[in-house]
Length: 237
Length: 100
Image 1 (tube, rainbow over the protein chains, first blue to last red):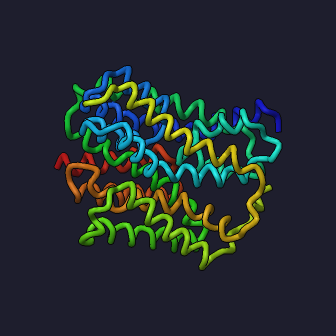
Image 2 (cartoon, rainbow over the protein chains, first blue to last red):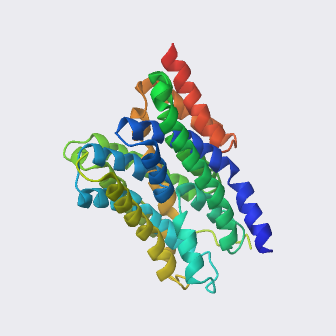
């Protein structure tokens, strides 16, 4: 397939991501301004980070007056899942794909772009990723700008409703995969159960949110890999 | 805020980019170990699920509205609707229920 065709495929497949991002980053923009950032700072933050949960957590650290080290640690824990996604995508690239392209793809390794990249038939072309990243980041920054710019004039009830957008987006990524693969369904249900225990149980509930996500993920995905090591071959060549 | 906002932003961006770029640039060959392959296969979906539940229930003003929003998102996703429809559908349900 030609580079131009790969690029336009990426653009097309990521239109729903772009629209979803506008909704979620709109909520982020509102929150950022409430936390004391300017419209420009909020938009720059979105452009340079492109990470939903990490950005929301980052605002928390900033408003609490946390140190740079603390901020770095929080990002490391919450965003460590991207390392696992990048490792998974490294298996989908042809070994001839060079350093520059790998660095380019890495910029846009989000949950959602990972989702459509993993679902792509055969090897992944960097140009497909560039198309998807371009339109997704556009939506992410535009939504942040609009939210930061208009957030102060919106009613609190609307802001509350937008709070669930991020999680709605996660549901939209996980459910289609769960429908196809029973082992993932079991792993997801086990993960939800253990996460809920960690959230409410004495002692365990004192573990920070980011740390809880890493611990539960490693435990459950590790157990799933031992119990169900036979994953579907990529037969979508 | 105690620190400089721009340094905060750059620290976040640097850490996040390093997390994303190192595996992509360091792992050049196919991983052969089937357990590691299986682990990488399960991780993204388990992480997203763990991030969603139970945090989703506390993402809006009312826990009950959030529960209904979660149910709406699940239903829409099972029916095959795309990202934006699922995300905004959940928002609409929360908005309407909190309005009542």
